[in-house]
Each structure stands twice: as structure tokens, then as C-alpha cells.
Image (cartoon, rainbow over all chains, first blue to last red; front, side):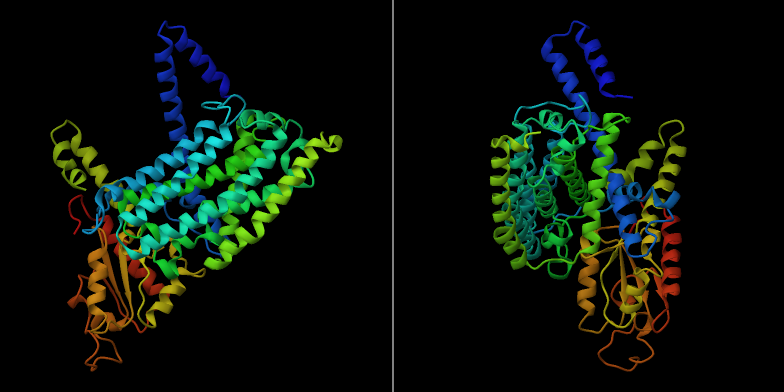
Length: 347
Length: 168
């Protein structure tokens, strides 16, 4: 059952009511934004619960058990509690910066979904620079972390914000180079065209030897670092920095950072699915089911990383990015370029 | 929080508003009780039992309790271990930094009344209720994880009985 058909039908109904094109666009885009927002809210709620269950089972615990069946209500209950908490602004905080930081994080996490294809035809806007747009928008998250760090006027928060800025700037480079090798093969920056260039399973970029698997692994490592998750979670290292950039945030503002973090993780998995795992393509099942299955599998891998690896030191983190990932991704890009233009591997 | 506190007052003016207010009460207090995030705070041997309660055999997370390192995001401070006169102002500071619906559990003999070993020490605070208001006392030296879980369930019972506006 394809959802895209329903939206198309509704859009045509709306267009045939005689409204001017501008109004049709405004209404359809607002509805699309609301649908994506609702979807992401549910996804974030689910992912928090899922992460707690996965972490618990990795550590031979049960995780939430008392709120609903196997604790499925846990995140909803957490949100209801966070709404009730006092909203503290520290006396010495830079008020506007402190206030806007969670909102910027929230919006940046949400904006990336404009160009992610959830299924065949299920995309808000198929920009011809789709992947470039996503890379640009997801980097906004860093500005919010810096704002939170600076605005809190707290040494731990500032250190956390600075660390995350340094980390993301260094991991952005290998990540973009890994994505670039895929773009080189697909010959397009549009997300839909990248997916359509992987119609058969042997055309998925992860299976294009030798550059595909390397690019995928580099992307996954850099993506983990970008979403500040555990082998690379120095910005929120509990032992050194209390809680990192969000030390001073309480109640709903903290919940917004939490939401943004989990949506970012879903974004990383969704882009990985689109670029390397054939996006929404697959047999028998509807396209959006395939997309969700692949994305959730990648999310599971990210969570698996988080609960089984110890944290790196700051110098190890930087050395790993600049001395290992960057040369490997450059070499990988050259190999990909050579494969593209020698006609031997063009299947 | 101001709006939520006044909500029942506004709701009373509508027909059927009382039912909404009471069920809202139920949902909000239930959700508060089911997601108590505790602060990472341990000063002595009781902290080892606190860690054991968080780990796999006893597992705090079953009740939705996870630790937060920052007092701004914590709801509960489990004072685990001897509080010396020097530590007392820090404990008060941490309590003051927590956001409003906040609870304290005094875990172990030292925090309840000075403890079985340090009762005559000039350096030990004789009970943390001199410093912060305590909701649940758990005696023992140190209390076993079962008693700590029992204390947390008692705190849950206390929270569940609260109405909107009862929060300290």
C-alpha cells in the first residue's frame, strides 16, 4: 500500500478547487511540514524508549518495565514530567542566547527532512541539490550547541560546546568526501536520483567494490561523531563535563535538546539508507516500509556502537579524524573517480 | 509551571471540568512518579549499594529511574553516604540547583541520624534533615539494594498522592 498516491490525490483535489497556485503551495507545504513533524515526534519518542531497552538488554537488565507493556509509555511519561518541571534560567546566563539555543537545535534537526525521500514519491521537495542542502542544514546543530555552551555562562557547558564544534568541523570533512564518492557515481545531488541509480541490489553503493563499503564505514563513523554519540560523545562526557553543553538546561528546554539529538541520529541513519542501502527500493513490501526497515536497522547499529564501545580521548578523536579518516577518504574518492571513468566497473 | 498550577481553577468553570481536572491530576502525578531521574551523588559506602541498585541485578531503570549528572535535570537526590560538615553546604547547593518538583531520599544510617560509627564525630552532620527537607528515610549501614528500591517505591506512592499545586 503506497502512501504517496493518497497525498497526490489530495493535492490534485486541492488544486482543482480553484484556489490560486500560491495558496495551494502554502497549504500543501504546511500540511507536509505538519505530517513530517508529527512523524518525527513519534520517531523520537520511539527511539528514546528503544535505546533504553537496547542498552538494558546489552547490559543484561530489563529497562523500563512498569509503565505500560514493557515500558512503552516511558518516553511519553518522561515528556509529561519534563513539562511539569521548573524552567530555570541561571542568573548569569546570556538570556536571549540561552533561550534560543534549544529552538535552533530543534529547527535544524527538523529542517533536514525536507529532502529525505521516505518512499517512492514520498518527499516534501525534491531539490536538485538535496544532499548538499542536508549537509548544510545539519551543521546548524553545532551553532545551537555553541549557543547553549556560551549562553549558559558555565565552564562545563562552554567546554562541551567548544568540543562539539571542534569535533563536528573535523568529522564533517571525511563525511562529505565519503558522500562525494557516491554523488560522483550517481551523477546527481538530488536524493531521488541517487536512490533511483541503485535500482538493483548489486547497484547499491555499499556493494560497489572496492570503494562502496569503505565509503559507507567512513560515513557511519563520521555520522556517529556528528550526532555526538558514544565512542565520540566528548561534548557530554559525564566524568569530565557533568553533562556537557546542556548542564544548565532543565525541563522542556532540555527535552528539546533530547528530541534534536534523537532526530539527528535518525537523520544520519536515513541519509545512510538513501545513499548506500538503496533508499526505499526493495521487493514485495511497500517502499516506505523498506525505508523504515533499513533506517531502523542502521539506527540499531548506531545504538549498538554506543553501548559497547568506550569513549575516546580528545587527542585520539582528532588524530583519528585528521590522520586516518581523511587520507583514507581522499584515497577512496580517487578510486571511485577512477572506477567511474574507466568503463570496466560501470554496471 | 504557573499555567499548569492554575489550570484546575480555570477548568472548574466549565461543565465537566472537574472530571478533566482530576484525571489531569492523575496523569500528571502518575507521570512524575514513573520517571524519577536521580542525581549522581554518592559520598561513602552507601554509594556502592546505589550503584549496585542501578546495575543489572536490581535495575533502577525498570521503574523509569535513570541518573542525570546535572542537578538541573534531576528530580531526586539520593544522599548516599556520610555527609560531613564540609559537604553539607554543597549538598544544599545541589538541592537548590534542582528544578522545582524535587525530592530527597536519606539513604543509610549516617544521613538519617549521624550513623552507627560517626555518631560522636565533630565532623559529621547528624542527619541531613538539618540541611534539606527529606521525603524518605532508609536506615541501614549500608541499606541493601532491596531496601533502597523499597524506599523509591515509597517515594513513588507519595508522589502519586499529590495534587496539582502540591509541589514544593
